[in-house]
Image 1 (cartoon, rainbow, N blue to C red):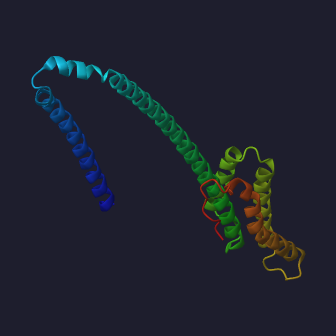
Image 2 (cartoon, rainbow, N blue to C red):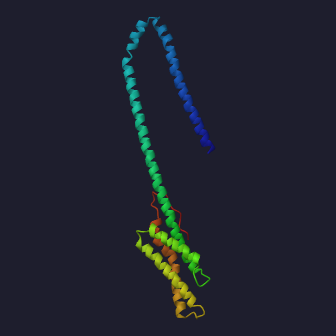
Image 3 (tube, rainbow, N blue to C red):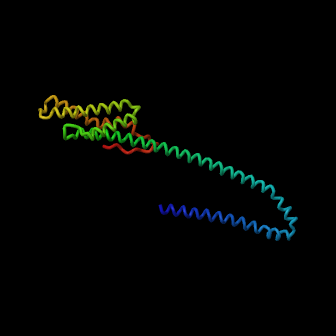
Length: 221
C-alpha cells in the first residue's frame, strides 16, 4: 500500500514536471524567435516575412492535426465514461446477486440446523426458539424461492415430519424396542438423517453460481 501511494506521488510529480518543461520550451522558443530571425536575416524583416509565409501549409497541417487530437480525446473520454457506467451497473448487479445468495443461504442453513436439532433432541419436544427460527426461514423462503413450489412444499413436509418424529419419540418412551411406535420413530429418524443430504440437493440449484460469477461459500457440512 505504501509503495502504491509513493508510485502515484511520483507519477503526479512527473506529469507536473513534464507540463512545466513543455511550457518552458514553448516560452523559450517564442522569446528566441525575434533574436534568431534578426540574426539570420540581418534585421531585414521583409525577407523574414516572405520566408515565414512558406510555412503556411505546415500551419494548416498542424492545426488539422490538433483538431483531430481534440476529437480523439473527446471520443476517448466519452468511451471511458460509458465503460465506467457499465462497471457501476455490473457492480450493482453483482451486489444484488450476492445479497440474494446470502439470504437464500441463511434459509438453507436454518433448515439444516433445524434437522440436526430435531435429531439431537434430549427432550420430548422441539423448543420454541428452534421452531421460531425454522418458521422464520420458511416465511422468508416463500419470497426468496417463490418460483420453486417443490422446495416450499419440501420445507412444509420437513416440518410435519419433524413434529411426527417428536410425537413418536414421546409415545415410544417406556415401550420395548420392538413396539410399533419405536419402529415408526426409528424409520422417521432415518428419513431425517437422509434430509441432511436432500436439503442440499433441494437448495443447490439456487445457490450454485456459474463459473463466470463470483463463487459462493461452500455448503456447511
